[in-house]
Length: 394
Ligand SMILES: [Zn+2]
Ligand SMILES: [Zn+2]
Image 1 (spheres, rainbow, N blue to C red):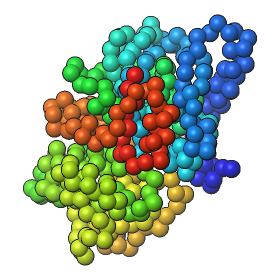
Image 2: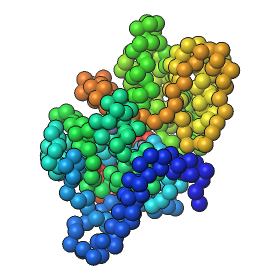
Image 3: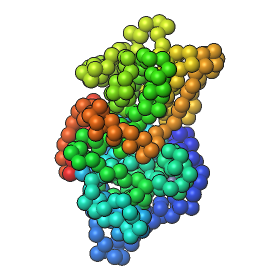
Image 4: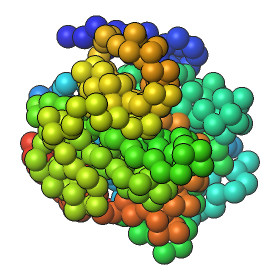
């Protein structure tokens, strides 16, 4: 059954370049038939979410040789996304089956004839969103809304993201090698930075664009990060933890990390954040920069209530079709609200700068590292347990 949000997501994903999306869908659906006619085409394994909370390896056609602008890569380290538990358990609008995984570091296997800056053998970050690097949106730093591909084009989200494949596979096709792939600096361990493909950038974007100018203006700035306001939240806490580490790295005078899950607060405290339960915030407490990473309308309302006059609230929004906003309160306080998806590729250079300079260590958030060959069992444990960040390595 499709939820109302699935219908909304599908409508947005087909808003532009619908023919392109349908062609990819048909091409993927007919892969099996073509394979039966041409059984010599190389095959590979790809982890697939099949519904009922189940993942299984499937044998699928390997990507064809890359087009002029493309590349084929081999994932070396794949990270879970904070959305994955909800996704695999069927609590998101993404219909099954879908190829699993969208955050990876990979080795380049082959590149197309017109690729200038990426060469086989390089280790690269593969952004989870598909972007060309040359359209006006990409030039403007809005790579999550690249106009060369259908809206919401992403790895690992099936029908809604488009059929680009998943990262837990032997190979992955990258349509725009120069535009998308970011070479990894020597010495960086793929397992340490696998989540830079999505979640680390997603944490950074709530802080990086705002904190430096607030610090210039005010000298001292406290930051409040809302991670979960419900103990039933299925979302992992890596994005808010990366946001907290980024805020510390960029000089916030204090980082208050709000989560109602005791185990997440323990992890946040170990990372040097001021971890508190939602009920422990004193009345009237507010900060000039707040991040709502709850994915819940109630969490967004709470974050807005914690945003000081002339402050900024950066929100992930969520998968709810709608939610109430305290518009009067926002008006009285002059609140600025930013809501939406990350533009991962655009912020990636700034994120990698923080990492290579040693100021941001995303590996401190990782809770499990395991071989990719064991993906089915390891991810099952992740989905049913409370691991914050699981990394699979080839
Ligand atoms: Zn993700
Ligand atoms: Zn583009």
